[in-house]
Length: 166
Image 1 (tube, helix red, strand yellow):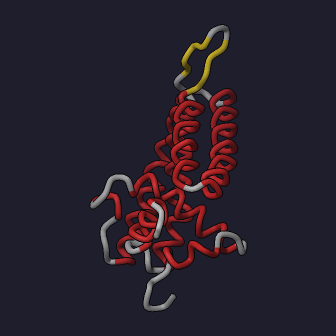
Image 2: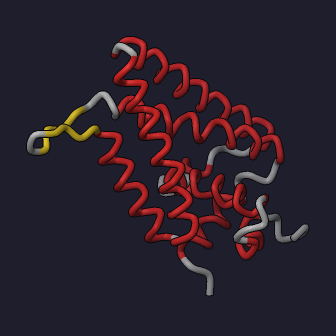
């Protein structure tokens, strides 16, 4: 029996059959995720003598959810998220908040533009319009595709390919 993650991955994949749509998502999804972490890195929550950024808090919560759905994909997402949180923190500490917000908007709008361009190729609306949870699955889908391309997690191919061509 398929796990919750495998079922969600299969549902997500059904909205992403066109190779051009998948290609736009490989750039658009990371751009959107990074833009959000970048904006959240501006928010600092005092914890004792230190301050923790909102990017760390949201990043840890997201990683916990991804790990709960699939350990391997979740751990790979943890590495990617760690890199993005560290880069966002570095940018926030070296750029003024104005520059961070400009970069946020460029990445956020650009990422979404790529998403919608991909879905124009696909001829189908985004998966999250039918199930909001699919927005959480999108980054995992990209990671699953990347790991399969590297020869890892080939077991997920049955959930990411068109059944007629799989």
